[in-house]
Image 1 (tube, rainbow, N blue to C red):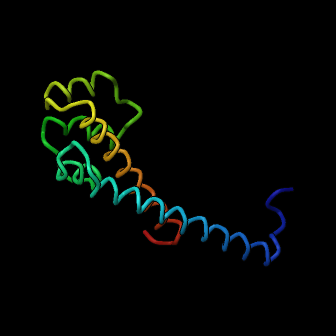
Image 2 (tube, one colour):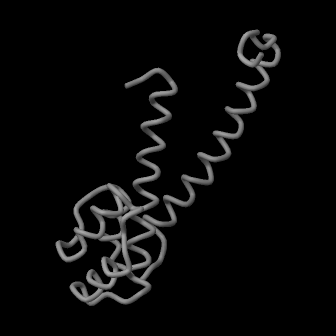
Length: 122
C-alpha cells in the first residue's frame, strides 16, 4: 500500500535534487517575469505598476479592484473592471497591466509563504 514503505535513499536524493533543479529554473523564470513587470515598458504609470506588483498602495480609484484581486480574484467581475476604468479614465491596456501586475505580485507573495513553510520557517 502507498506510503507504508519508505522510498530507498537514492530515490529520495534523486527526488530532492530534481525538485531543487526545477525550483531553480522556475525561480529564474519568475524573477525575469517580475523584473519585466516592474521595470519594463508599459502604458500604466511605472509607480502604479510597481505598487500593484509589490503589494503597495495604488490610486484610490483603483484600490477596490486591486484589493479584490489580492484577496479573492475569483470574485472579480466585468463590472468591477469597468467601474475602475470609469473612475480612473485608464485605457484597456493600462487596466490590463494593473490586473496582471496585481495578480502576479500576489501569486509571488503566496509562493514565498509556501516556500518558507516547506523549508520549516514561519
